[in-house]
Image (cartoon, rainbow, N blue to C red; front, side, top):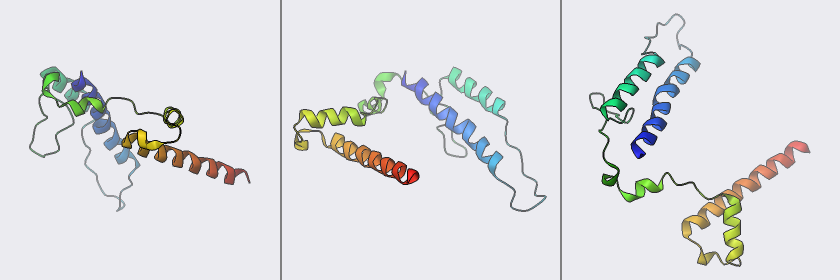
Length: 134
């Protein structure tokens, strides 16, 4: 269900990323004592407890707030389910442009924007590779 997907994605971000940042940071003042936060294992235990209780772990951003409860799938808006759909690749979009005989007015505007973004990115990567070699 969507709740499980969101919980897994957000749990990875909310648990691991802060610890990686803390490990990379150096103390600004030598000898400064930094308080240690909860360990990764404590976060995993908290996440597992939240999932068992039917809460979405890691979504709360308020200091004294609580994580929201998991709702039935029917109560979530339709647009939310579209976020999980894979985006079209450059090759797929190029096929659509070819099928439209180059007339992009026949295509969906979001697809046209994505086509231009991906083709521009591919061109930049190709130019960068050419500059490395020569």
